[in-house]
Image (tube, rainbow, N blue to C red; front, side, top):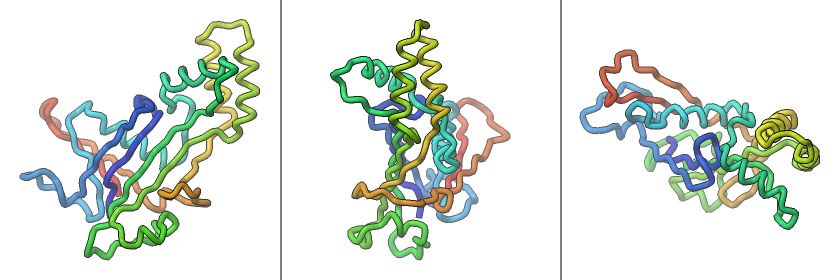
Amino acid sequence: MYLKSLEIKNFRKFGDKNNIVEFINSKDTPEGTEINVAQNTTLIIGKNNSGKTTIIEALDTLVNGKFTGSDFNFFYLKKLFEGYENENTNKQFPEIEFKLIINLEKNKNDDITNLVPLMTLEDLDDTEIELKIKIVLEESQEFLGEFDKIINKKISGTEKFLKIIEQMNKIGYKTKFYRNDDIEIENFKLDKLINVVSIKANNVSDKNSLKMHLIK
C-alpha cells in the first residue's frame, strides 16, 4: 500500500487548477538507485528546489490539521474576496482541497483496517482508494458578518486583506473527509493512515543531486 497521487487546490503556491503530484513506490526507484527503506513507503525524489518540501509540508499539515490563513493561496483568496463585494455573486467560502489516491498492490496482504471507512462496495475489487479532503472555516456565517465590517472600514486594501486573514484565523478551521462518492466520513484520523518523515541529505555535491522524502 502506498500513495499514488496527491491533488492540491488553493494551498500556498498551488492555485485553483488541477495540481496533481504523482508518487512512486519504494520498490520502483529509478534504475541504478539503491535505497534501503521499509516496504509500503512512498518516495518523493527530485532535484533541489523542485517542490518536494512544499508537497511534504502539505501532507504534514494535513496529518496534523494545523492550518492557518497563510496556507491559503494568495491569488485565490484575493479573487474570492473581490467577488464578495459584488452583491449579485453567490458567496463561496474559503476552502483548501486535496485528493489522495492510495494504491493497494495486487497479491499483497495490505492491512486495510484504516482504509475501511473510505471504502464502498464497489471498491472491494479495486486496487485504488480515493480520499477527498477539504479545509473549511469553522463558522462560515460568522466570517461573512466580520468580512462586511472590515470591508466598510476606511483603511487601505492591504490592511483590509490582512484583517480578513486575521479574522479567518480567529474563527478557525476544520478538516472534512469524503469518500469517492462524496459521502462525508465522520471521526476519520489521517494520522492513522499516513506518517510523514523527511530525510535530509548531508552530502549534496551539486544542484543536480537528488534529495528524498518518505511518506509511510
